Length: 387
Image 1: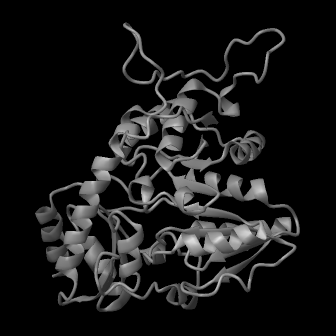
Image 2 (image 1 turned 45 degrees about the horizontal axis):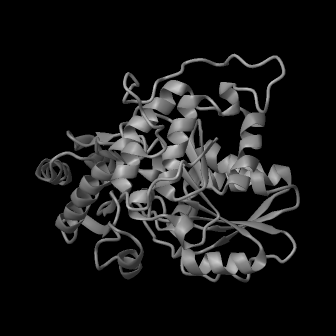
């Protein structure tokens, strides 16, 4: 856990990504944050305050990247943990007890849906889902609803949710709003500035950015982070110091990577829309997307994921995936490498065909996470794979 070291407001996001949270350096100090690969640290016999112990999330390498991420999201404090699912699980448990109730967006990440539908009910916590564009007020129960949970950009159907009116409703009822900002990143949108109480990231994706880190981030006010920290110390998903260092290194180039990835994604979406063999292209930057106007208002760019539905269904989509040469077939997203996956076999494999269709995941659905390669090369690979 680390409190943000305040930076001058004149500093832009890229500058904060490189410098936020760093101490004043003196001659002989290292330019990069050292990796303190130690599980424990020397304490006084009678410690004045907390003991320093890596599982307690106060290893200096962990704290350095947490300070930087707090600065990017505009939060008072942040916490780094071992995965995105750890971040969301700990965040929910910080607010919820047996008998409590969650109101959640219907189109959440498959792993989050499984947590809400299978694991939390065993603790006496139930969830009501709201379809995209549905009304959020009716499911909010006066006595038991404690959390509203949504994603800025949904996975993998790329629906964009307007946090502002939902946060206003929740605030009036004393309900906490948790936003998964993984797809947008703080480069495109910062939910805390629009009324959210807590932001989570799977830092495995864009924040790390190189497919070599598994991590999660929670950003919120100091009292909220203190609650999440207590859960983290109990359940133990501490981030290894070396991975914390890799995450901080990735964050330094976040803004320039995301800018290039979004530009590539937008160009590919335009090129694929209307192409023979492609039934539909799903991308908020296209005017055909149902949330295009909202995305244009809320986001600084439209994201770096493009979903397509291939004509011919799942068998044809599998054929396209096998023919890809430059774009790699792998789960996850947000890397400098372009990746392709079918939610049918990855994030939403535990769901029935009917439930997937209800979320907009049709037969032939492919999710493309666009990297920083040359646009022309990516398009050529997709063209040859589509035949």
